[in-house]
Image (cartoon, rainbow, N blue to C red):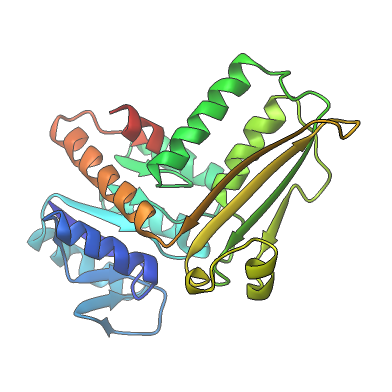
Length: 264
């Protein structure tokens, strides 16, 4: 299996490449990037102009290629259009971008891909449980006030896609919220003292707290998931690559999400 990890020299892309290599995937020495760099740790970095010139030769040399995208929110839609145009199956771990346009693109093309706001299987399982609850218990939190605080490394430019997904489920269960629904914490001292993030993990973490309070403040519910490091996402991404490769091999590939990966 040939894998092109896009987003070098980003830290997430580096960890994905390491995990894929440990699983004996062939991580090819090319990466799509927005950085003004030509090479990084043996990877040839292709910007938006160079990739169109190089991709035909890359696909000829590395057949059965799957792209893994951990780039920048601003590149989500243009990268997806590139993958669809060149018939490259992909796993989209990058959050942000125009998600409606992204999903419309891959559904119209029935393009083999996995798109999810979070690749950590355990968090995806929690997300699936809340989605199920929202469908089956639509008034469970009626009248409750929802507050969400999420902390990620200061380089994360967008609001957490996972937080958005879980907020949607809570609102569908009747919770209400004042704007803004999600508080983003990116200032490091606030992350340490407000969110209790260990200093050694300021460069890579995901601390989320979802609080629900009854109208009279006598009842409080709190859901929390705190992740230090990036390995949990890398392992889930590698699972997604394996899942997609199997679907392609059996000619049953289409747009999937991480809940499909868990179910499979």
